[in-house]
Image (cartoon, rainbow, N blue to C red):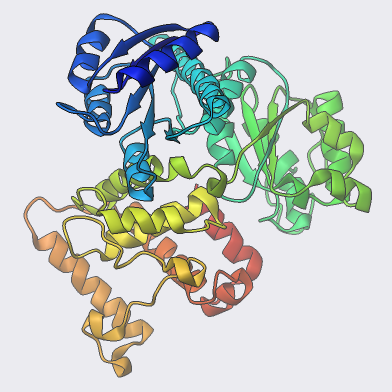
Length: 480
């Protein structure tokens, strides 16, 4: 069982919880306030701290902050008789695992402590793994989270990565399936070899076979020379097949043969090429229903689904919103040369209230837009979506840009953009990475088209002169 520290200025409650938790098999110590708790924590390690909010000398929130600032490795559960959302949210923002409201049911306390211990165990295991990978010189890719659901996912990655088995990643679009695929690669013995990714729904069917298996010169019109496919490019490493549910039945048959025989045949050739590739596939579709409807082969499903990892939707793990937002803010600050210092309270409340149909990718786009438009030194709610309008952005008015409606043409926007870049480069020490800049602009245009069409990709594609497939492919590549 666990070693627990109970922090509360109420002697009777300390005694009551001590008796109950010791009967549960835990090793329990107590402290009457936050300052005393810190003294104990500096000398002794605890898996869980169960602390009251309202206490003299140092309250529970300040204790929580001190624990995080000092790097004390423990999970914190806060107790409060003041069931205001603000207090609970503030505790979660400062890094609490969970909270319980007084008067509480003992069964509820037992469940929260058990889950907290489970998360703590996974966090320690994952930290040890990352340290081992760092010392071995392997590249690492990491998840940003504080939820037990994602701790379980990372724990599963740690167990599965060293195996040679194929993996199927399930989850809604935008939940981070490619990040998990990269982690599986970088935490495996295949890490020094290539990681190759392809979106099976972004390339026309007639080209997909050549992309996967390659072709020889003269195989079809335009095949002017031999070309290696992605399976050969990924030899010795990992091939990530995103949106595997979009693959045609014809290509499903050919992929099944590759997985069974470990050989490929380039288009237009009769020669077989041996390949050594681990396949990680991903989809947001229910493949079992696709099998029943005849659009996905059952034998391929079982070849791909040797090990299954399911990624939870962001709306089901809202405790991850704050750390993810901070992570994306730091990234966008670097990318755009900004120095925004966190989020104000209203911005945090808005971010917590959104439904996130697009999951983590949607949150990233929201933060990118806010950083690009924010005029304050901190992210406010001004440029965040309106939770009351299903998360749709409020349009930035023409007046706020300083342009008259008649001036808004592609030519005038290009001129404004060029002038802005010229001004930026004229400042001492300001440089521009052209490829990054163009990618950011393209991403912003595509996202704006989505915002103005209520996230309808078909309509958005038409707004920017692309086909639906082109639009989806570009959006997918830009958001990798």
